[in-house]
Amino acid sequence: MIRVRFVSIPVSDQDRALDFYANKLGFEVVTDQPFGPGQRWIELRPPGAETLVVLFTPPGMENRIGGFQNVAFTCDDVEAAYRELSARGVEFVQPARRAPWGGVEAIFKDPDGNTFVLAKPANN
Image 1 (cartoon, helix red, strand yellow):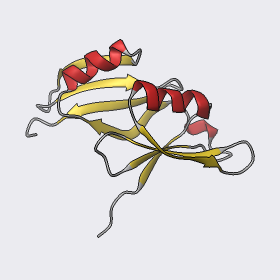
Image 2 (image 1 turned 180 degrees about the vertical axis):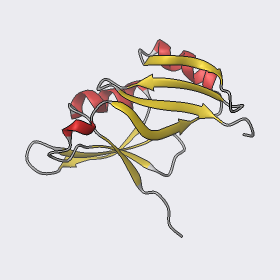
Image 3 (image 1 turned 45 degrees about the horizontal axis):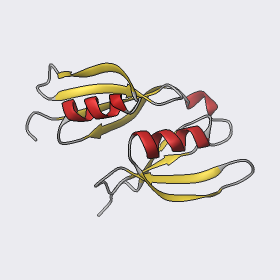
Image 4 (image 1 turned 90 degrees about the vertical axis):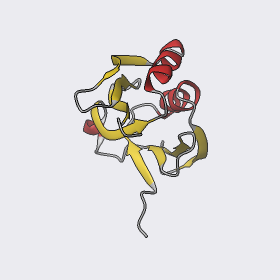
């Protein structure tokens, strides 16, 4: 069976990104090792997830840093996560709210301006 091993998030500063994802979002560091000149391969695991998040930008792909990312995160209680993450200093561009599609969603940014949806579908 095919599964998703990891999703890559393009970042400009791997140390700053690692601090954000590990300390503010609470992701577990799985791998942090050298990967070519001046880069590291950093894998993190969101709590309870099988799919990993990789903080790596291939050379020549720096234009992918910032903006809306095609990665959506989920949790059991978006409102509680919004309050907790806001208290940790995570910047939300949209607070937790009931979405037109019936679920609850919030939108946050990382230090590079990468933007993500945090959502819980109505049927979960």
